[in-house]
Length: 139
Image (tube, rainbow, N blue to C red; front, side, top):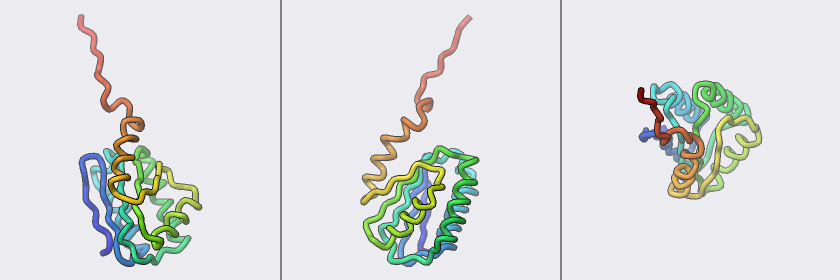
């Protein structure tokens, strides 16, 4: 399968390569969404720099967007970073943007390093209470 998923402490790194089919993309999204760690997920890096082609239609993307929308009902605080340096992946991203139904903040980057930098900047903004010091009263 031209999709590898690696879990990280607050996120997931997904590497897509070769010729990617709708089923492979759909299966990877459903696999992550069904994982017990999904509710704590804060980012997803989708490295599309190795894609050489795709077999995904507009109807397929509508289905993917619907699955993502449903998953957002469980966890809406996921940052989506898409890494691509190749023109082959661009049509997929443009089609998904055209649908304008992605429930997540999504950005496109030329490198994984730039994607990780964006996530590091955005996570504290996205979840400002994460580092808050609890205040307690003593009697």
